[in-house]
Each structure stands twice: as C-alpha cells, then as structure tokens.
Length: 408
View 1 (tube, helix red, strand yellow):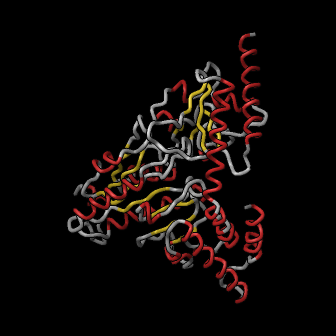
View 2 (cartoon, rainbow, N blue to C red):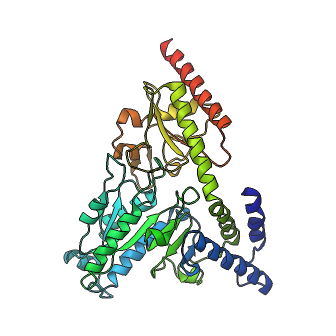
View 3 (cartoon, rainbow, N blue to C red):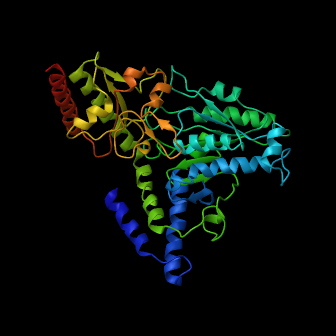
C-alpha cells in the first residue's frame, strides 16, 4: 500500500496553497478532499457529509476527535428538553441534579478517559466508569444498561482495546440503548452512542451503520449521524466543525487507506495465520508452564494481529526483556503512554496522573506478577513465519543469557 499511498500524498503536499488561493490549486485540492471524504465514508458505512477531518485521533494531545464527541454530547444535553435553558449554568444544573451523565469503560484510551475525568472534575458532567468482566474482558451489556440515568446523554465504549485486542459487544450495547431511547423519548434527551474504532480500522471490518453508533472515531476521521458542536470558531473549514487550513496531503494519505478495506479479508487471514504461528512457536520454545496469553478469555474475540503474552518467571519484566532483545520491536503497553519506548514502572503524564503500562491487564483480572511480564507483540502485512522464528529465537537467547547472569 505504501507505493500506492505515496503519490497521492505527494500530490496533496504539492498543493500547498490554502483553499482560498489560486482557482486551479483550490479546485484540485477541493476535488481531492471531496473524493477522499466520499471513499472514507464508504469504507466505514457512513455518508460523505458525516465525515469530519481532524489532525489526528488525539489532535496534538490537546483537543482530540474523541474530545469533540464528549463536548458535543454535553452541549446537546444542555440544549435538549427538558434541560434546555440557554443561559443555564453548570452550578444550577448541579444543584438540580441535572448534570449530563456519561458512561464509559475503565479500559478506554486516555483521550476518552481523561476527557471524562476533566468534565467530572470541573463539575460539568457525572461519569460512570464501567469495569470490564474478569471472565470475558468485555464491558457487559447489562452493566451499561443498569448504569443509565435520566440524565445520561452519552455511552462511549471502545470497539476493541489496543493492548489486549478484545473486541467489545458494541452492536449489542447500541441495540439495548436504542430500546431505552424509545422508552424515554418524551421525558429525556436521547442517549448518544460513540465508539473509538481507531485501533480496529484496517484489522477487522468496521461499519458504523451495522454497529448502530451515532459517532465513530477512526484515527483522525469521524462519522457522525447527528449534529454536533464546534470546538473552535472562524475559518469555516469542515462545515465549521474543525477549523484551520485543510491538510490536503493528510486527507489524501488516509484516502489511500481504502485499499486496506478492499483487501481486508486477505489481510485479516494473513494476520490470523501469523498470530497463530507466533503463539504455537512461543509454546513450543518456552513451554505451556512458562507462557501465559493475556488476550485469551472464553467467548471473547480478539484482533487477528495482537498477541499479548507474558513469559513467566522472576526478573522477566516486559520492559527488561525488551531492553535486551536485539531484533524484537514490541511494547509493554499502549504506545501512546510511552515517551521513549518501554516503561518499567510508571510515568507521570501532563495531568500529574500515573499510569502502569499494564494497567489494562490488571483491570482484566490478570495477576500483577503476570501483568508486569507482559509483552504486546503485533504482526503486520509484512510479517511472515520466518520473522516469527527470528524474534522468538531472539527472546530465547536473551532469556537464557539473563538466566545465566542471575545464577552467576
């Protein structure tokens, strides 16, 4: 795909003028953006008018595409009957017990979790953090429904967790929430439904219509079924929802990702073959008493390219193992939590909060001594069995060397 992606990106990059510049440049750039918007919409089962381009899923770590959904839900709530009042302030809503209520899981991406915590801290929303089942690693549908309040305005559950790859029952959640919406149509605003599918796109089939969501985040793009509210004003780009110069090269580069969608069945089969080979190889080399697959939960589906595994034993912490490997490039947690690769204990983020790199595993019920040894290994379209042989041998050699050093 890289060979096919580069020319469009180069073309877009060469259209360096803003869309208010020379007519020919403007028209070429607009044609690229309009065509890209249409093809991306078809890729995720949406409409071109629903696609909003941003600079990325975490929008320069300041205001993310995911943040925009939360802001929209809160504003939608404030402007909906019976809570509409235009000038109604947060203190009055709080005093009346009428703050907007949001439901998320406790394994969401930080752009979801920290936004929810910020709204909670600022007194602008009540938030329920649903725990995931320690049996299935899912967010249970019954827990989501049980947590709905009269003021619930948003349910946001990740489509698949990026560390263990467990695919959540989003379709079932949406179906049940829509039933609730029908029952409370006259008494409260509808509950909006969002899923962060940034990790899922290109690995499994993603269709916003089939899932039943109002909003879906795919890296830097969103498919909206409802009107939402802009974070910035002026300029008028992206239908006034995301302002600033149009990054034509970025848009065109993502348009090339449609090729992934067209070949998804082939890619998914390849991912699954290599993932299975990797798991079999690890078991063959280290033995079943030494290997624990952290993504294996009964009845749960996982990404075909994600293997979260712990090599059991003293001194085999994931970060330590990775630091000695010569060829294996993997992680011990989500890449977006790391400033410089593997994190051995924790890091402090800009909000002063601490993250264990394996906190998702702990939330899934994985014991601490197993979670601390976790390695997240991902396979790609260019990964083959020969590559798996090399990295497993690399792991074996480094573990043998470490064992000799510890016993000397």
